[in-house]
Image 1 (cartoon, one colour):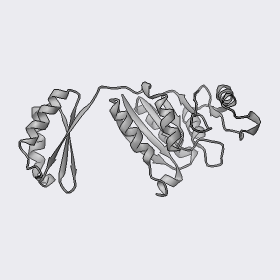
Image 2 (cartoon, rainbow, N blue to C red):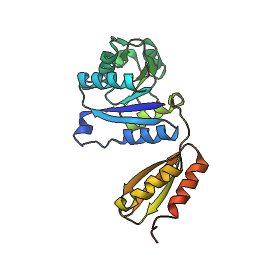
Image 3 (cartoon, rainbow, N blue to C red):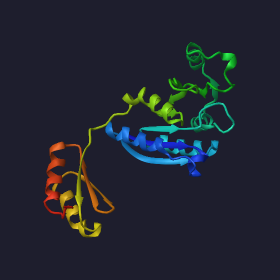
Image 4 (spheres, rainbow, N blue to C red):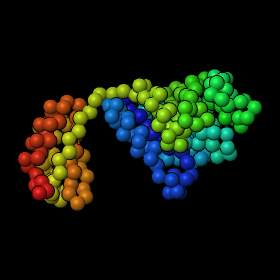
Length: 228
């Protein structure tokens, strides 16, 4: 299963808010064996949201959108998703009923709180008010991290893939000097190798067969200079 993550918010693009939602989602998805192919941040503009969601829903198995939920002037994510699907934005009766059962009076809710793309399944917000939505492989979640994480946990069973195993090998050599051994290990074993330089170089060996990954990591470990 391959997935695209879209985070919405002017504050993310301005650097005023750290995009922890994208990092958390990627970690959880990869743990479930899902391949995250894109992470994109867009401003609070209906046209930008609609264009990116429409492109990604045609290209990937699922699209997760976070941020911009609610009834305020800059909460336009639901409208953008509705535009991407060519659907109207309508008041969702089930979402309103759930909010009532949770202690929110309809009269006290701001107009538009429960407006979702027509035909959506409402995703209830256990930690907040504004509901999320699931429609045509698009999952719309809140931007508040506690709300987003709780809502994702209610739907994470929809995201599955082959278990991936990873083993890290640390090399005390320049990255450029390791290229031949990286090529060799990939040729000998059915694995991927990520190379991440810093004080040392972290070589992350990955694959779907645990024994193969372990063997490839052991092969590499014997052929690189390791920190003392």
